[in-house]
Image 1 (cartoon, rainbow, N blue to C red):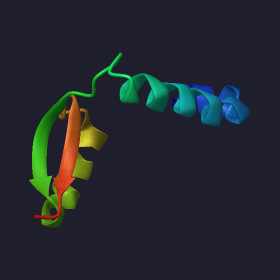
Image 2: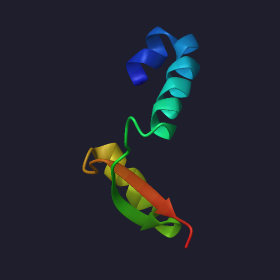
Image 3: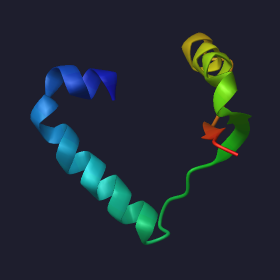
Length: 62
């Protein structure tokens, strides 16, 4: 996504809309691998920044 944002920023909205359409249709799935409380947002960012997190990290409000 970072490379695409640099090369063709005008296409990001188009790709995002298509990804959301496929997700809503059940054609793709997002794999949540870790659920952290909102208070652990800093830990979530650290996992993402270091590449230690795999899949999606979900921040919970409850």
